[in-house]
Image 1 (tube, rainbow, N blue to C red):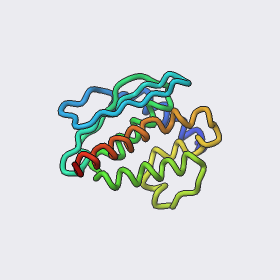
Image 2 (image 1 turned 60 degrees about the vertical axis):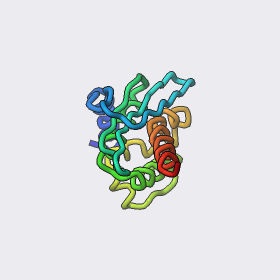
Image 3 (image 1 turned 135 degrees about the vertical axis):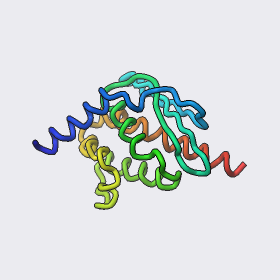
Image 4 (image 1 turned 180 degrees about the vertical axis):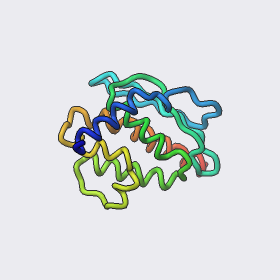
Length: 148
């Protein structure tokens, strides 16, 4: 199986799975992301306790890329501290822009590497990064809440 086929299978699997698509009991943050150009409308739900993402899920609807990307992201960030999640999101954004990321970042991104060629499809970049933008907005809000 080629890398392209393997990555396509990962995206399809996460899109179909739905294991992260549900309401979240006891959420501390919810961040809606909307992409009017294709209709993606997803909300990331987080439960953050003492700076750790204890649980995460998403609700809404979107294309296969947006739903697979947010699902993969949730698998990666659950149990992670906010700084690590923010760093991972920054690595994902760099990768999505076609920038070279470190081998350590590639390893940490695991299944999210399925989106490594999204920079070659500018119209779909917003789809693949939507959930990650919800994450960084939630982290910024959480950090601001801690300061106040």
